[in-house]
Length: 108
Image 1 (cartoon, rainbow, N blue to C red):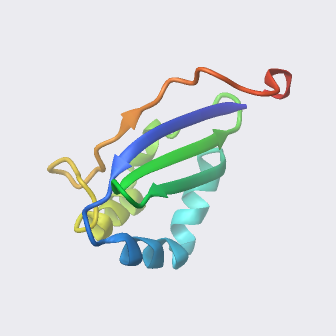
Image 2: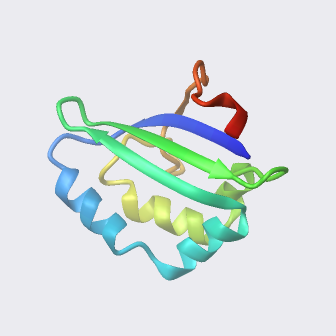
């Protein structure tokens, strides 16, 4: 299994609408994530800083790198751009994280 973790930055005061939009995640976006081998995608919020921590588990030999090239993902980014720090193309600014500890390691 492939595991990815990264951070993003939520704009101040946008916590509730961010939660609401994810609670109503588009069915076509769910299908797209699944089609790209994403088995688990969790996002956690540090309310004090607005920092978002995201964690993904993907099937072996899969990557989320190609999601950015899909029309559905580009529409989602445009819909979320008012809530997050983004690049000019609305892609969220992502800071990849290096995995330094796993317990128990033999499960992964």
